[in-house]
Length: 112
Image (cartoon, rainbow, N blue to C red; front, side, top):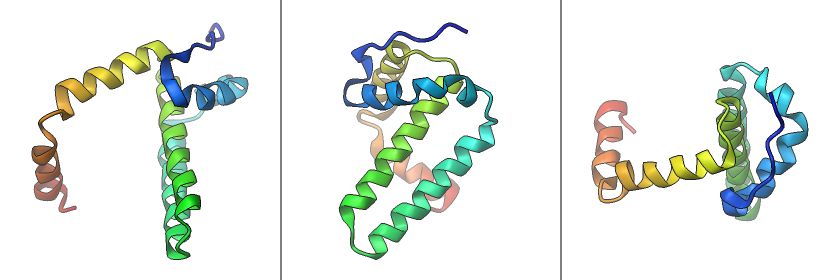
């Protein structure tokens, strides 16, 4: 697979994308469970920081969750430009004007 060319499509998250490019091959060989577990670890760390009332550290862990999501999209073989399009489309078609229904679904179906 050809190395992706760095572009600014991901806005403030482009630097995260670029930072992980050096281990692209290794990321592509990870199983899906790697990304699930990495996210769980970040949430555990976020909760620890919140327990110590360290919001800045918690925010850094939340940003790490975004980094994991970006790497999962890389694993799915999307480019930054495609990710940008997917995010905009998802917001427009699924989220805007529908957030009350989304929250209600999570409450009704998943009890959260």
